[in-house]
Image (cartoon, rainbow, N blue to C red; front, side, top):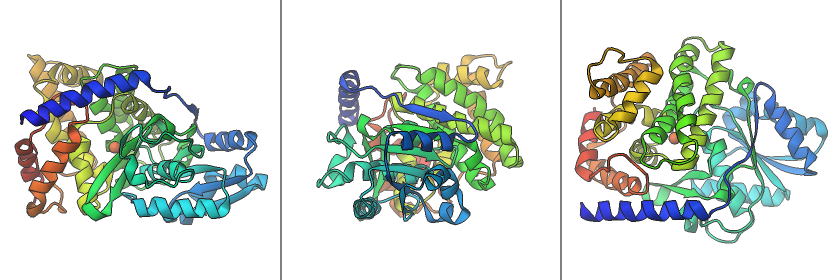
Length: 399
Ligand SMILES: [Fe+2]
């Protein structure tokens, strides 16, 4: 227990020192319906003529990928595609993408997809200009060489990967999801174009939206007071509580869809300043062990972690209750914090997201708890988890 606390304190100190020394984390953003066309025109204006579009097979089949880069196709530049990226992308997929990029001689990458596509493309952008094994880059700031320019067009309103300098890659050999981050992995520009998100099925809308909510809440209740993380998180949380139930019930609500796209982007900007927390530390294991979609895993874990965190995070959670308009008559700050947690649970219920995951196996509990604790020590969490804490949550989440 002591060693976990010591390691956490050491990592927090190191992280704060490195953040002060590193390069800036701002990038260019195009927003609103049609902004993907603006981004493509911007890329063409840089003089690039050989472009790799990273995406996935479903988006290609639906025509979303081509719609996002229509401006490039109309301009007649050389466009190559790598669409073998799957949910919970692996180092093998990074390697395959690197070879497609090199064979095509592409000068830049445009990632069109959800978090898996954008994360995989981030590591491809580093792998394309290096002979090093990307597995050596796990952690912060290890990608020191110049990368291939990367541009991002998200097709879900959830991951926020278009706004962050981190990528989560699965190491299939040891069931581990690892985080590689650093300023060089931040996309040079992003287009948050809700027109590309109109066809998202309700279940994916719900799960990815809850991923965005998790980002915003983890950034808001964390212990590292930095930059505009609170402001970005507040805008995202208020919007998600209003807009997500609307587009889940009515996929054609364009205004709510546009609001969700921006909320996910703001939540991404928030975590890019302070990182995620205990929810992600547990949810990543469900992705690595069972391939559970990231957003769904976060949605299920979020209420358990909020209950676990409500002591030290009580004031922040009470502020969020005011923000979303619940707990107005609560007699104490603790009761108000509980009202916010209850509102998160109610949102899950509205989105038909349960409190358990069928995939979790009891024989994996110990290994998952160990891995989650190990991951969480590097996050500025309001309450540090011990293995027994995670085991208790896993027990409640297992059918
Ligand atoms: Fe996430």
